[in-house]
Length: 171
Image (cartoon, rainbow, N blue to C red; front, side, top):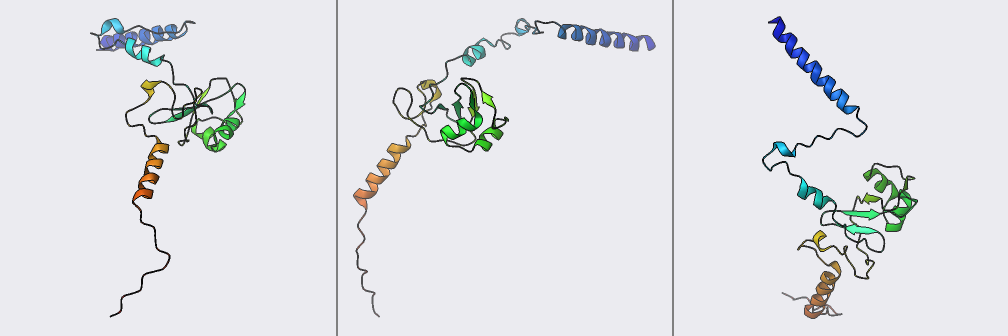
């Protein structure tokens, strides 16, 4: 029984040593395991989707996705400057992204917004979300047209209130 335990220990020590040596490689250790599965480990489609072009930001640098919004930073802009540009609380934006408010950002850095911000005009002059149609869903609502329709409907069917109250019925 002692020799069997010794073999298990020897195998474990050899495995740990091989893993430790592999971690010391300057190129990194990235084993390609796709050949071991029957098509289930192919990540080609996921890699292609990950590098698709992102939507164009609006004039303030905001990109709207169906479930969240992000803002694109300009060169040497701080988190506080980004927050002031889009009208959100600098502290909340910094906390939501786990950075300090005075952190200087690189050009093109993306910050997630803690709350939704009204959409502004895009670079091509259209209002709303970015120009990538794949980022939109069929359920996208145009708030301006929705509000205008509600106002128009209320003006057409509402009866003006009379200036003088009607007399109360007497019993």
